[in-house]
Length: 96
Image 1 (spheres, one colour):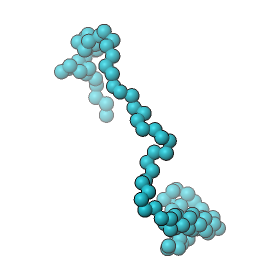
Image 2 (cartoon, rainbow, N blue to C red):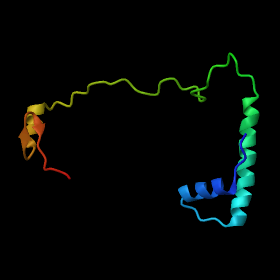
Image 3 (cartoon, helix red, strand yellow):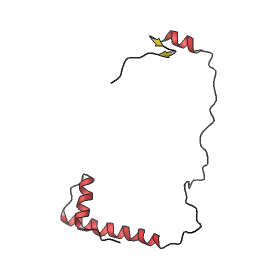
Image 4 (tube, one colour):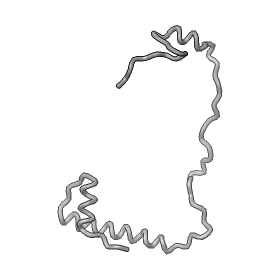
């Protein structure tokens, strides 16, 4: 694993729109190195034959099926009530 430098931390801080002192940069360098060390430990775990987890909550399909509801109004009646229509659609002003 490559060591994280103070310049790396300051670059990350700049990208994150944070202003940090040299002392804070050193503290963050140490903390980020420890965090990356934990990820290095994960690389040592044997995961052969283990399928990746995509959903941990047990949900399969939370979508409802589409059903057509008849409200007793047809398209032509609705278009007649619109201020303007064209080609079977409600015509509205441009929005830029």
